[in-house]
Length: 250
Length: 322
View 1 (spheres, rainbow over the protein chains, first blue to last red):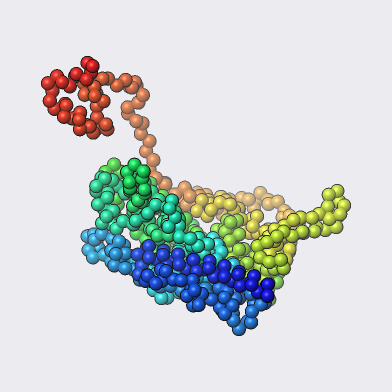
View 2: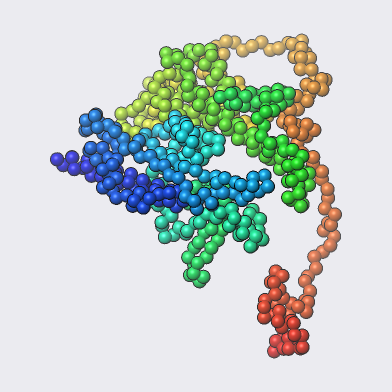
Protein backbone atom coordinates (compact mmCIF):
# COMPACT_ATOMS: atom_id res chain seq x y z
CA UNK A 1 0.00 0.00 0.00
CA UNK A 2 2.79 2.30 0.96
CA UNK A 3 4.66 1.61 -2.25
CA UNK A 4 1.59 2.23 -4.30
CA UNK A 5 1.09 5.71 -2.95
CA UNK A 6 4.72 6.49 -3.64
CA UNK A 7 4.19 5.45 -7.23
CA UNK A 8 1.08 7.52 -7.61
CA UNK A 9 2.85 10.53 -6.17
CA UNK A 10 5.58 10.13 -8.71
CA UNK A 11 2.99 9.79 -11.45
CA UNK A 12 1.29 12.91 -10.21
CA UNK A 13 4.52 14.86 -10.28
CA UNK A 14 5.47 13.76 -13.77
CA UNK A 15 2.03 14.46 -15.08
CA UNK A 16 2.11 17.96 -13.59
CA UNK A 17 5.46 18.66 -15.19
CA UNK A 18 4.23 17.55 -18.56
CA UNK A 19 1.08 19.62 -18.18
CA UNK A 20 3.09 22.74 -17.38
CA UNK A 21 5.25 22.19 -20.43
CA UNK A 22 2.16 21.69 -22.56
CA UNK A 23 0.65 24.92 -21.31
CA UNK A 24 3.83 26.86 -21.94
CA UNK A 25 3.78 25.63 -25.53
CA UNK A 26 0.30 27.09 -25.99
CA UNK A 27 1.41 30.35 -24.43
CA UNK A 28 4.41 30.39 -26.75
CA UNK A 29 2.18 29.88 -29.77
CA UNK A 30 -0.16 32.63 -28.62
CA UNK A 31 2.74 35.01 -28.00
CA UNK A 32 4.12 34.35 -31.45
CA UNK A 33 0.72 35.23 -32.90
CA UNK A 34 -0.84 31.88 -33.74
CA UNK A 35 -4.52 31.15 -33.28
CA UNK A 36 -4.95 29.59 -29.86
CA UNK A 37 -8.26 29.39 -28.04
CA UNK A 38 -8.69 30.66 -24.50
CA UNK A 39 -9.62 27.20 -23.37
CA UNK A 40 -6.36 25.75 -24.65
CA UNK A 41 -4.42 28.50 -22.92
CA UNK A 42 -6.00 27.72 -19.56
CA UNK A 43 -6.22 23.96 -19.83
CA UNK A 44 -6.86 22.58 -16.33
CA UNK A 45 -4.66 19.80 -15.04
CA UNK A 46 -7.58 17.44 -14.51
CA UNK A 47 -8.66 17.69 -18.09
CA UNK A 48 -5.12 17.24 -19.32
CA UNK A 49 -4.76 14.15 -17.19
CA UNK A 50 -8.04 12.71 -18.37
CA UNK A 51 -7.02 13.20 -21.95
CA UNK A 52 -3.40 12.11 -21.98
CA UNK A 53 -2.55 10.00 -18.93
CA UNK A 54 -2.55 6.21 -19.04
CA UNK A 55 -4.86 4.25 -16.71
CA UNK A 56 -2.26 4.34 -13.96
CA UNK A 57 -1.96 8.08 -14.09
CA UNK A 58 1.51 8.12 -15.63
CA UNK A 59 2.51 10.24 -18.55
CA UNK A 60 4.22 7.19 -20.03
CA UNK A 61 3.98 3.66 -18.82
CA UNK A 62 6.64 2.17 -21.04
CA UNK A 63 9.20 2.91 -18.33
CA UNK A 64 7.24 1.02 -15.73
CA UNK A 65 6.18 -2.16 -17.44
CA UNK A 66 7.32 -4.14 -14.44
CA UNK A 67 4.46 -2.84 -12.34
CA UNK A 68 1.91 -2.35 -15.05
CA UNK A 69 0.13 -4.71 -17.33
CA UNK A 70 1.81 -4.51 -20.72
CA UNK A 71 -1.55 -3.89 -22.32
CA UNK A 72 -1.54 -0.43 -20.86
CA UNK A 73 1.58 0.58 -22.68
CA UNK A 74 0.86 3.84 -24.23
CA UNK A 75 2.73 7.04 -24.30
CA UNK A 76 0.94 10.28 -23.77
CA UNK A 77 3.66 12.19 -25.61
CA UNK A 78 2.83 10.47 -28.86
CA UNK A 79 -0.70 11.81 -28.53
CA UNK A 80 0.41 15.34 -27.75
CA UNK A 81 0.58 17.04 -31.10
CA UNK A 82 -0.39 20.62 -31.72
CA UNK A 83 -1.10 22.48 -34.92
CA UNK A 84 -1.86 26.17 -35.14
CA UNK A 85 -2.42 28.69 -37.89
CA UNK A 86 -1.12 32.24 -37.87
CA UNK A 87 -3.51 35.08 -37.13
CA UNK A 88 -3.96 38.02 -39.47
CA UNK A 89 -1.79 40.28 -37.32
CA UNK A 90 1.00 37.75 -37.41
CA UNK A 91 0.71 37.43 -41.17
CA UNK A 92 1.00 41.17 -41.44
CA UNK A 93 4.12 41.22 -39.29
CA UNK A 94 5.75 38.58 -41.43
CA UNK A 95 4.94 40.15 -44.78
CA UNK A 96 8.00 41.82 -46.27
CA UNK A 97 7.67 45.30 -47.74
CA UNK A 98 6.71 45.33 -51.41
CA UNK A 99 9.66 45.92 -53.69
CA UNK A 100 10.09 46.36 -57.40
CA UNK A 101 10.97 42.72 -57.91
CA UNK A 102 8.17 41.54 -55.65
CA UNK A 103 5.20 43.93 -55.78
CA UNK A 104 2.76 41.85 -53.69
CA UNK A 105 4.77 39.86 -51.16
CA UNK A 106 3.27 36.89 -49.37
CA UNK A 107 3.59 36.50 -45.61
CA UNK A 108 6.53 34.33 -44.65
CA UNK A 109 4.71 32.28 -42.05
CA UNK A 110 2.28 29.41 -42.00
CA UNK A 111 0.92 26.52 -40.03
CA UNK A 112 3.07 25.48 -37.11
CA UNK A 113 3.35 21.94 -35.84
CA UNK A 114 4.54 20.93 -32.38
CA UNK A 115 5.63 17.39 -31.63
CA UNK A 116 6.66 15.83 -28.32
CA UNK A 117 9.31 13.17 -28.62
CA UNK A 118 8.32 10.03 -26.69
CA UNK A 119 11.89 8.71 -26.33
CA UNK A 120 13.22 9.20 -22.83
CA UNK A 121 16.88 9.28 -23.88
CA UNK A 122 19.19 9.14 -26.83
CA UNK A 123 17.47 11.46 -29.26
CA UNK A 124 19.61 11.55 -32.37
CA UNK A 125 19.39 11.87 -36.10
CA UNK A 126 16.89 9.04 -36.41
CA UNK A 127 14.11 10.88 -34.62
CA UNK A 128 14.99 14.19 -36.25
CA UNK A 129 14.88 12.63 -39.68
CA UNK A 130 11.41 11.28 -38.98
CA UNK A 131 10.33 14.68 -37.69
CA UNK A 132 11.78 16.52 -40.69
CA UNK A 133 10.01 14.10 -42.98
CA UNK A 134 6.72 14.66 -41.19
CA UNK A 135 7.02 18.45 -41.39
CA UNK A 136 7.94 18.31 -45.05
CA UNK A 137 5.26 15.82 -46.01
CA UNK A 138 2.44 17.72 -44.35
CA UNK A 139 3.71 20.99 -45.74
CA UNK A 140 4.01 22.75 -42.38
CA UNK A 141 5.84 26.03 -42.46
CA UNK A 142 7.39 25.65 -39.01
CA UNK A 143 7.99 22.68 -36.76
CA UNK A 144 8.87 22.54 -33.08
CA UNK A 145 10.35 19.36 -31.72
CA UNK A 146 10.26 18.94 -27.94
CA UNK A 147 12.42 16.33 -26.29
CA UNK A 148 13.05 15.25 -22.73
CA UNK A 149 16.84 15.20 -23.06
CA UNK A 150 19.35 17.21 -25.06
CA UNK A 151 19.74 16.09 -28.68
CA UNK A 152 23.02 15.20 -30.33
CA UNK A 153 25.07 17.82 -32.22
CA UNK A 154 24.46 16.19 -35.59
CA UNK A 155 20.76 16.12 -34.83
CA UNK A 156 20.87 19.88 -34.23
CA UNK A 157 22.51 20.36 -37.61
CA UNK A 158 20.11 18.05 -39.34
CA UNK A 159 17.20 20.01 -37.95
CA UNK A 160 18.23 23.10 -39.90
CA UNK A 161 18.74 21.36 -43.23
CA UNK A 162 15.13 21.42 -44.40
CA UNK A 163 15.05 23.99 -47.20
CA UNK A 164 12.32 26.60 -46.95
CA UNK A 165 11.03 25.36 -43.60
CA UNK A 166 11.93 26.24 -40.07
CA UNK A 167 12.49 23.53 -37.48
CA UNK A 168 13.15 24.39 -33.88
CA UNK A 169 14.00 22.33 -30.87
CA UNK A 170 13.21 22.79 -27.19
CA UNK A 171 13.81 20.69 -24.16
CA UNK A 172 10.86 19.98 -21.91
CA UNK A 173 12.62 21.39 -18.90
CA UNK A 174 13.20 24.69 -20.69
CA UNK A 175 9.47 25.07 -21.11
CA UNK A 176 8.47 24.11 -17.56
CA UNK A 177 8.06 27.76 -16.75
CA UNK A 178 7.33 30.49 -19.22
CA UNK A 179 10.40 32.70 -19.04
CA UNK A 180 8.69 35.70 -20.55
CA UNK A 181 6.26 35.81 -17.62
CA UNK A 182 9.10 36.42 -15.19
CA UNK A 183 9.15 39.90 -13.73
CA UNK A 184 12.78 40.48 -14.67
CA UNK A 185 12.20 39.68 -18.33
CA UNK A 186 11.08 42.81 -20.17
CA UNK A 187 8.45 42.72 -22.86
CA UNK A 188 9.74 41.92 -26.33
CA UNK A 189 7.62 43.03 -29.25
CA UNK A 190 8.42 42.08 -32.81
CA UNK A 191 8.26 44.98 -35.27
CA UNK A 192 6.72 44.51 -38.69
CA UNK A 193 8.89 45.45 -41.69
CA UNK A 194 6.91 48.66 -41.99
CA UNK A 195 7.48 49.61 -38.36
CA UNK A 196 11.11 48.74 -38.72
CA UNK A 197 11.41 51.03 -41.72
CA UNK A 198 9.78 53.85 -39.79
CA UNK A 199 12.09 53.34 -36.84
CA UNK A 200 15.18 53.45 -39.01
CA UNK A 201 13.89 56.53 -40.76
CA UNK A 202 13.05 58.30 -37.54
CA UNK A 203 16.45 57.78 -36.01
CA UNK A 204 18.21 58.00 -39.38
CA UNK A 205 19.91 54.67 -38.83
CA UNK A 206 21.04 51.80 -40.90
CA UNK A 207 19.85 48.54 -39.41
CA UNK A 208 23.44 47.56 -38.71
CA UNK A 209 23.68 50.53 -36.36
CA UNK A 210 21.06 49.16 -34.01
CA UNK A 211 22.06 47.24 -30.90
CA UNK A 212 21.83 43.51 -31.44
CA UNK A 213 20.31 40.40 -29.97
CA UNK A 214 21.48 36.90 -30.72
CA UNK A 215 19.18 34.50 -32.47
CA UNK A 216 20.07 31.97 -29.77
CA UNK A 217 18.90 34.29 -26.98
CA UNK A 218 16.30 32.53 -24.83
CA UNK A 219 13.59 35.06 -25.53
CA UNK A 220 14.51 35.19 -29.22
CA UNK A 221 14.15 31.43 -29.35
CA UNK A 222 10.86 31.62 -27.49
CA UNK A 223 9.51 34.12 -30.00
CA UNK A 224 11.03 32.30 -32.95
CA UNK A 225 12.79 35.43 -34.20
CA UNK A 226 14.63 35.37 -37.49
CA UNK A 227 17.77 37.11 -38.65
CA UNK A 228 17.23 40.70 -39.68
CA UNK A 229 14.08 41.31 -37.67
CA UNK A 230 13.92 44.05 -35.07
CA UNK A 231 12.38 43.67 -31.62
CA UNK A 232 11.27 46.47 -29.39
CA UNK A 233 12.08 45.85 -25.77
CA UNK A 234 9.97 47.71 -23.26
CA UNK A 235 11.46 48.00 -19.81
CA UNK A 236 10.13 49.61 -16.70
CA UNK A 237 12.17 52.58 -15.70
CA UNK A 238 12.16 54.31 -12.34
CA UNK A 239 12.74 57.68 -13.86
CA UNK A 240 10.98 57.53 -17.17
CA UNK A 241 8.14 55.13 -16.47
CA UNK A 242 8.69 53.06 -19.56
CA UNK A 243 11.79 52.80 -21.62
CA UNK A 244 11.90 51.29 -25.08
CA UNK A 245 14.99 50.00 -26.77
CA UNK A 246 15.42 48.13 -30.02
CA UNK A 247 17.45 45.11 -30.96
CA UNK A 248 18.40 43.77 -34.35
CA UNK A 249 18.33 39.98 -34.48
CA UNK A 250 21.56 38.45 -35.74
CA UNK B 1 20.53 12.05 -52.86
CA UNK B 2 21.71 13.08 -56.27
CA UNK B 3 22.76 16.53 -55.17
CA UNK B 4 24.57 15.11 -52.17
CA UNK B 5 26.54 12.86 -54.43
CA UNK B 6 27.67 15.67 -56.63
CA UNK B 7 28.57 17.76 -53.62
CA UNK B 8 30.88 15.11 -52.33
CA UNK B 9 32.39 14.94 -55.76
CA UNK B 10 32.95 18.63 -55.76
CA UNK B 11 34.86 18.47 -52.56
CA UNK B 12 37.07 15.62 -53.62
CA UNK B 13 38.32 16.91 -56.90
CA UNK B 14 40.89 19.63 -57.20
CA UNK B 15 40.77 19.81 -60.97
CA UNK B 16 39.20 23.11 -61.94
CA UNK B 17 37.44 21.82 -65.03
CA UNK B 18 35.72 18.97 -63.24
CA UNK B 19 34.89 21.23 -60.38
CA UNK B 20 33.30 23.82 -62.62
CA UNK B 21 31.43 21.20 -64.62
CA UNK B 22 29.97 19.57 -61.54
CA UNK B 23 29.01 22.78 -59.86
CA UNK B 24 27.93 24.78 -62.87
CA UNK B 25 24.21 24.17 -62.47
CA UNK B 26 23.81 24.34 -58.76
CA UNK B 27 26.05 27.25 -57.82
CA UNK B 28 23.81 29.89 -56.27
CA UNK B 29 24.08 33.41 -57.57
CA UNK B 30 25.68 34.85 -54.46
CA UNK B 31 28.85 32.92 -55.15
CA UNK B 32 29.26 34.38 -58.62
CA UNK B 33 27.20 37.53 -58.70
CA UNK B 34 26.41 39.00 -62.06
CA UNK B 35 27.73 42.39 -63.22
CA UNK B 36 24.39 43.90 -62.33
CA UNK B 37 24.50 42.64 -58.77
CA UNK B 38 28.05 43.84 -58.36
CA UNK B 39 27.10 47.31 -59.56
CA UNK B 40 24.21 47.33 -57.14
CA UNK B 41 26.49 46.42 -54.25
CA UNK B 42 28.93 49.18 -55.10
CA UNK B 43 26.18 51.78 -55.55
CA UNK B 44 24.61 51.01 -52.20
CA UNK B 45 27.93 51.62 -50.47
CA UNK B 46 29.37 54.98 -51.46
CA UNK B 47 32.86 54.38 -50.05
CA UNK B 48 33.30 50.89 -51.45
CA UNK B 49 35.62 50.02 -54.28
CA UNK B 50 36.04 46.97 -56.45
CA UNK B 51 38.59 45.75 -53.94
CA UNK B 52 36.08 45.79 -51.11
CA UNK B 53 33.72 43.81 -53.25
CA UNK B 54 36.35 41.19 -53.90
CA UNK B 55 37.16 40.83 -50.23
CA UNK B 56 33.50 40.54 -49.38
CA UNK B 57 33.11 37.93 -52.08
CA UNK B 58 36.01 35.92 -50.85
CA UNK B 59 34.67 35.83 -47.33
CA UNK B 60 31.27 34.85 -48.63
CA UNK B 61 32.82 32.00 -50.57
CA UNK B 62 34.74 30.83 -47.54
CA UNK B 63 31.63 30.76 -45.43
CA UNK B 64 29.76 28.95 -48.15
CA UNK B 65 32.43 26.30 -48.51
CA UNK B 66 32.39 25.88 -44.73
CA UNK B 67 28.67 25.27 -44.78
CA UNK B 68 28.98 22.82 -47.64
CA UNK B 69 31.71 20.92 -45.87
CA UNK B 70 29.61 20.66 -42.74
CA UNK B 71 26.71 19.34 -44.76
CA UNK B 72 28.97 16.78 -46.35
CA UNK B 73 30.15 15.64 -42.91
CA UNK B 74 26.58 15.32 -41.72
CA UNK B 75 25.69 13.23 -44.77
CA UNK B 76 28.69 11.03 -44.17
CA UNK B 77 27.69 10.48 -40.56
CA UNK B 78 24.25 9.42 -41.70
CA UNK B 79 25.78 7.05 -44.24
CA UNK B 80 28.20 5.55 -41.76
CA UNK B 81 25.35 4.80 -39.38
CA UNK B 82 24.24 2.12 -41.84
CA UNK B 83 27.56 0.29 -41.76
CA UNK B 84 28.50 -2.55 -41.69
CA UNK B 85 26.44 -3.71 -44.62
CA UNK B 86 25.89 -7.24 -43.31
CA UNK B 87 24.71 -8.05 -39.80
CA UNK B 88 27.17 -10.91 -39.47
CA UNK B 89 30.29 -8.93 -40.34
CA UNK B 90 33.31 -9.46 -38.17
CA UNK B 91 34.89 -6.21 -36.93
CA UNK B 92 38.34 -7.85 -37.00
CA UNK B 93 38.10 -8.75 -40.69
CA UNK B 94 35.72 -6.27 -42.30
CA UNK B 95 34.72 -6.56 -45.93
CA UNK B 96 36.77 -4.70 -48.52
CA UNK B 97 33.84 -2.60 -49.60
CA UNK B 98 32.90 -1.41 -46.11
CA UNK B 99 36.51 -0.62 -45.27
CA UNK B 100 36.87 1.49 -48.39
CA UNK B 101 33.66 3.36 -47.69
CA UNK B 102 34.59 3.92 -44.07
CA UNK B 103 38.03 5.24 -44.90
CA UNK B 104 36.98 7.54 -47.70
CA UNK B 105 34.09 8.90 -45.67
CA UNK B 106 36.32 9.76 -42.76
CA UNK B 107 38.62 12.06 -44.72
CA UNK B 108 36.83 15.36 -43.94
CA UNK B 109 36.18 14.37 -40.33
CA UNK B 110 37.61 16.00 -37.26
CA UNK B 111 37.84 14.06 -33.99
CA UNK B 112 34.74 15.86 -32.72
CA UNK B 113 32.79 14.80 -35.81
CA UNK B 114 33.94 11.26 -35.18
CA UNK B 115 32.69 11.53 -31.59
CA UNK B 116 29.34 12.62 -32.95
CA UNK B 117 29.29 9.57 -35.17
CA UNK B 118 29.96 7.33 -32.17
CA UNK B 119 27.22 9.07 -30.21
CA UNK B 120 24.75 8.61 -33.04
CA UNK B 121 25.65 4.96 -33.38
CA UNK B 122 25.11 4.46 -29.67
CA UNK B 123 21.72 6.11 -29.95
CA UNK B 124 20.89 3.50 -32.56
CA UNK B 125 22.02 0.89 -30.03
CA UNK B 126 24.98 -0.25 -32.09
CA UNK B 127 28.65 -0.42 -31.17
CA UNK B 128 30.60 2.82 -31.56
CA UNK B 129 33.04 1.19 -33.97
CA UNK B 130 31.60 1.68 -37.43
CA UNK B 131 32.57 -1.71 -38.82
CA UNK B 132 31.07 -3.65 -35.94
CA UNK B 133 27.49 -4.95 -36.28
CA UNK B 134 26.99 -5.84 -32.62
CA UNK B 135 25.07 -3.88 -30.03
CA UNK B 136 26.90 -1.74 -27.54
CA UNK B 137 27.35 -2.90 -23.97
CA UNK B 138 24.76 -2.08 -21.39
CA UNK B 139 25.60 -2.07 -17.72
CA UNK B 140 23.03 -3.04 -15.18
CA UNK B 141 23.12 -0.08 -12.86
CA UNK B 142 20.83 2.16 -14.83
CA UNK B 143 21.47 4.92 -17.33
CA UNK B 144 23.69 7.90 -16.83
CA UNK B 145 25.14 6.84 -13.53
CA UNK B 146 28.19 5.66 -11.81
CA UNK B 147 31.72 4.59 -12.37
CA UNK B 148 33.20 1.19 -13.03
CA UNK B 149 36.39 -0.45 -11.93
CA UNK B 150 38.43 -1.75 -14.78
CA UNK B 151 41.12 -4.24 -13.89
CA UNK B 152 44.25 -4.51 -15.97
CA UNK B 153 46.27 -7.64 -16.60
CA UNK B 154 48.11 -9.41 -13.85
CA UNK B 155 51.44 -7.70 -13.37
CA UNK B 156 50.26 -4.40 -14.82
CA UNK B 157 50.16 -2.65 -11.45
CA UNK B 158 52.81 -0.36 -9.96
CA UNK B 159 56.22 -2.00 -10.02
CA UNK B 160 54.97 -5.00 -11.94
CA UNK B 161 53.04 -6.29 -8.96
CA UNK B 162 49.32 -6.80 -8.73
CA UNK B 163 46.91 -5.39 -11.29
CA UNK B 164 46.27 -1.84 -12.34
CA UNK B 165 42.83 -0.49 -11.56
CA UNK B 166 41.18 2.23 -13.54
CA UNK B 167 38.00 3.96 -12.62
CA UNK B 168 36.04 4.66 -15.78
CA UNK B 169 32.75 6.47 -16.16
CA UNK B 170 30.02 4.13 -17.22
CA UNK B 171 29.24 6.03 -20.41
CA UNK B 172 32.79 5.42 -21.62
CA UNK B 173 32.37 1.68 -21.30
CA UNK B 174 28.93 1.65 -22.82
CA UNK B 175 30.11 3.18 -26.05
CA UNK B 176 31.51 -0.10 -27.36
CA UNK B 177 30.59 -3.75 -27.56
CA UNK B 178 33.98 -4.88 -26.29
CA UNK B 179 37.40 -3.55 -25.36
CA UNK B 180 38.75 -4.72 -28.70
CA UNK B 181 36.27 -2.55 -30.56
CA UNK B 182 37.08 0.39 -28.29
CA UNK B 183 40.72 0.03 -29.24
CA UNK B 184 39.91 -0.18 -32.94
CA UNK B 185 37.64 2.85 -32.85
CA UNK B 186 40.03 5.00 -30.86
CA UNK B 187 42.91 4.02 -33.13
CA UNK B 188 40.97 5.60 -35.97
CA UNK B 189 40.22 8.68 -33.92
CA UNK B 190 43.86 9.56 -33.27
CA UNK B 191 44.58 9.51 -37.01
CA UNK B 192 42.05 12.20 -37.82
CA UNK B 193 43.15 15.75 -38.43
CA UNK B 194 42.16 18.48 -35.99
CA UNK B 195 42.03 21.00 -38.80
CA UNK B 196 38.64 21.61 -40.37
CA UNK B 197 38.46 20.59 -44.05
CA UNK B 198 38.06 24.08 -45.39
CA UNK B 199 41.39 25.11 -43.86
CA UNK B 200 43.31 22.06 -45.01
CA UNK B 201 45.83 22.36 -47.75
CA UNK B 202 47.16 19.70 -50.04
CA UNK B 203 50.29 19.49 -47.91
CA UNK B 204 48.32 18.34 -44.86
CA UNK B 205 48.57 14.63 -45.29
CA UNK B 206 47.27 13.91 -41.84
CA UNK B 207 43.89 12.26 -41.93
CA UNK B 208 44.00 11.46 -45.64
CA UNK B 209 45.29 7.92 -45.29
CA UNK B 210 43.57 6.11 -42.48
CA UNK B 211 44.63 2.68 -41.35
CA UNK B 212 42.50 0.24 -39.46
CA UNK B 213 44.09 -1.22 -36.37
CA UNK B 214 44.43 -4.62 -38.01
CA UNK B 215 46.15 -3.14 -41.05
CA UNK B 216 48.55 -1.16 -38.92
CA UNK B 217 49.50 -4.27 -36.99
CA UNK B 218 49.99 -6.18 -40.21
CA UNK B 219 52.22 -3.45 -41.50
CA UNK B 220 54.38 -3.48 -38.45
CA UNK B 221 54.95 -7.19 -38.84
CA UNK B 222 56.12 -6.81 -42.42
CA UNK B 223 59.67 -5.44 -42.61
CA UNK B 224 59.92 -1.78 -43.60
CA UNK B 225 60.24 -1.20 -47.31
CA UNK B 226 63.69 -0.92 -48.87
CA UNK B 227 65.00 2.60 -49.39
CA UNK B 228 64.36 3.86 -52.87
CA UNK B 229 67.18 3.95 -55.35
CA UNK B 230 68.37 7.07 -57.15
CA UNK B 231 66.80 6.02 -60.43
CA UNK B 232 63.38 5.54 -58.90
CA UNK B 233 63.52 9.00 -57.35
CA UNK B 234 64.47 10.40 -60.76
CA UNK B 235 61.55 8.61 -62.36
CA UNK B 236 59.21 10.05 -59.78
CA UNK B 237 60.50 13.55 -60.42
CA UNK B 238 60.02 13.21 -64.15
CA UNK B 239 56.57 11.83 -63.60
CA UNK B 240 55.62 14.96 -61.74
CA UNK B 241 56.34 17.06 -64.80
CA UNK B 242 57.55 20.14 -63.00
CA UNK B 243 58.07 22.22 -66.13
CA UNK B 244 54.51 21.78 -67.35
CA UNK B 245 52.54 24.99 -66.78
CA UNK B 246 49.14 23.28 -66.69
CA UNK B 247 50.41 20.98 -64.05
CA UNK B 248 51.89 23.78 -61.98
CA UNK B 249 48.61 25.64 -62.10
CA UNK B 250 46.91 22.56 -60.77
CA UNK B 251 49.52 22.36 -58.08
CA UNK B 252 48.92 25.97 -57.10
CA UNK B 253 45.23 25.24 -56.93
CA UNK B 254 45.84 22.34 -54.61
CA UNK B 255 47.96 24.44 -52.35
CA UNK B 256 45.22 27.03 -52.16
CA UNK B 257 47.41 29.71 -53.69
CA UNK B 258 44.78 30.43 -56.26
CA UNK B 259 41.08 30.03 -56.27
CA UNK B 260 38.65 29.33 -59.06
CA UNK B 261 37.16 32.74 -58.85
CA UNK B 262 40.46 34.60 -58.99
CA UNK B 263 42.97 32.57 -60.94
CA UNK B 264 45.74 35.11 -60.45
CA UNK B 265 45.69 35.22 -56.68
CA UNK B 266 43.32 35.64 -53.82
CA UNK B 267 42.62 39.34 -53.79
CA UNK B 268 44.44 42.21 -55.45
CA UNK B 269 46.44 43.73 -52.68
CA UNK B 270 47.59 47.24 -53.35
CA UNK B 271 49.42 48.92 -50.51
CA UNK B 272 49.28 52.67 -50.45
CA UNK B 273 50.87 54.84 -47.80
CA UNK B 274 48.66 57.34 -46.08
CA UNK B 275 49.71 60.69 -47.47
CA UNK B 276 49.22 62.74 -44.38
CA UNK B 277 51.81 61.29 -42.09
CA UNK B 278 52.72 62.31 -38.58
CA UNK B 279 54.48 65.54 -39.61
CA UNK B 280 51.58 67.64 -38.42
CA UNK B 281 51.63 67.86 -34.68
CA UNK B 282 48.22 68.07 -33.10
CA UNK B 283 47.32 71.53 -31.92
CA UNK B 284 45.62 72.34 -28.69
CA UNK B 285 42.06 73.58 -29.17
CA UNK B 286 41.59 77.33 -29.09
CA UNK B 287 38.91 79.25 -27.34
CA UNK B 288 36.33 80.51 -29.76
CA UNK B 289 33.72 83.16 -28.92
CA UNK B 290 30.81 80.67 -29.20
CA UNK B 291 32.44 78.37 -26.68
CA UNK B 292 31.90 80.86 -23.86
CA UNK B 293 28.61 79.28 -22.85
CA UNK B 294 29.76 75.77 -23.32
CA UNK B 295 29.19 75.75 -27.07
CA UNK B 296 27.25 73.15 -28.93
CA UNK B 297 26.83 69.57 -27.86
CA UNK B 298 27.91 67.57 -30.89
CA UNK B 299 26.44 70.20 -33.16
CA UNK B 300 23.33 70.78 -31.11
CA UNK B 301 22.77 74.21 -29.54
CA UNK B 302 20.77 74.07 -26.30
CA UNK B 303 17.67 76.17 -26.65
CA UNK B 304 18.40 78.83 -24.03
CA UNK B 305 21.75 79.50 -25.53
CA UNK B 306 20.43 79.76 -29.02
CA UNK B 307 18.03 82.54 -28.06
CA UNK B 308 20.75 84.47 -26.35
CA UNK B 309 23.01 84.31 -29.31
CA UNK B 310 20.20 85.79 -31.42
CA UNK B 311 19.95 89.05 -29.48
CA UNK B 312 23.52 90.18 -29.53
CA UNK B 313 23.19 93.35 -27.51
CA UNK B 314 25.77 92.82 -24.86
CA UNK B 315 23.60 90.97 -22.30
CA UNK B 316 25.18 87.82 -23.36
CA UNK B 317 28.52 88.62 -21.81
CA UNK B 318 27.04 89.51 -18.44
CA UNK B 319 27.30 85.98 -17.22
CA UNK B 320 30.97 85.88 -17.93
CA UNK B 321 31.58 89.13 -16.06
CA UNK B 322 29.78 87.93 -12.96
